Image (cartoon, rainbow over the protein chains, first blue to last red):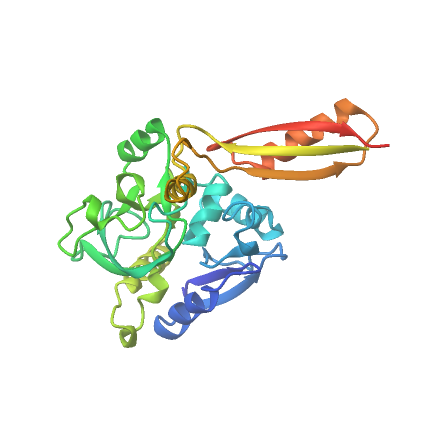
Length: 233
Length: 83
C-alpha cells in the first residue's frame, strides 16, 4: 500500500507547496491538494494542515479557517481516528477547532521568529515519532509570530500525565531550558498530540527540513513515521 | 434592526505581550501613571431582526463561536436600536 497524504489549501496558506514537495519529491509518497471549499478528503490516509496565514490571521490565528467547509470533514476524520498533522498555522487551526487543547498567543518577544531550533522528542511512541529510534533531538526550523503556547494548569497537567507533549524546544544536546524557548511557550511546548494520539500539532516546520540541499533532513523522520504507520495498519 | 458593539477582552490570567509593549511605549513617552495595559478587540455590526431578545441570542452565539475564543477571552456587548 502506498500511503496517500492530503494537503489542505486555505486562502493564505504558504507552506502547502513545501509540504507537497517534501512528501512527493523527497519521500515519494502520493500527495494531493485539498481545497478549503471542498468537502471530500479524496480517500487520503493522512491530512496535513500546512503553515501560512490562513484568512490573513484576521480575528485570531486559525479562527476563520477552522470553519472552512473542508474542516468539517477533517474534524470528523480526526474523531474517527484519522491521522491529522497541523504545522504552524495548521497547529493554530487545530487549537481553534478544539481538536487539541490550549491557545496560541503572540511570541513574548513580540517578534516574528524565523530560525532553526532543536526539539527534544519527549514521546517516541507516537504515530509521528515511531521512526526515530536513534534520534532524540531534531533540528527543524520555526517561523511564526504567534507560537506562544498557553493552556491552564489543569490542561498542562493532563498533557503531561497522558504523554501528549511530543516536542519541546531544547538545546542541541536536548536540554530544555528558558534560553532555548523561542516564543515563551509554557513548558517549552513545541508540539502536542491529542489523547487518542492521531492528531499532532507542532509549530516547527518539518516540511522545511526534508531536502539535504537545505542543510537539514530531520523533518523526514516525522513523515516517514506516519507513512510507516499507515502501511502497517 | 439593532446596532451591536462587541468588546472582546483577554482573560486576566492570559499574558498579553502586546499590552506590555504598548505600556513600554507609554513609559518612554513619560506617561508614568499608566499601568496594567491590556489590548482587546472592538467589533461593531448590525443585526437585522426586530426583536431585542432574538438579537441578543444571535450575538451571544456569534461572539462565543467566532468573535472570541472562550479558552482565553471574554466578551461583552451593547445593543442600540436603529430605526
